[in-house]
Length: 64
Image (cartoon, rainbow, N blue to C red; front, top):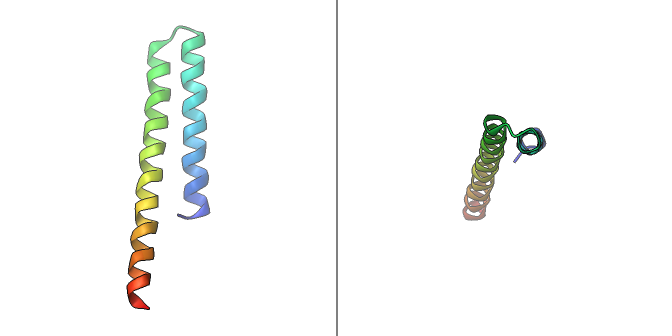
């Protein structure tokens, strides 16, 4: 996973956390749900990047 991808996913996760917290504090369910969705999206993207890295490692192991 590239550093840029990691930073982007982390930013999306933090942004989602802020939205969720703000939504809870202001009793705004839409904002809270939007924050949860942002966090879920960041989590999925991070998982996909980890799978790509793992697949690359397996491929490299067979080349040796």
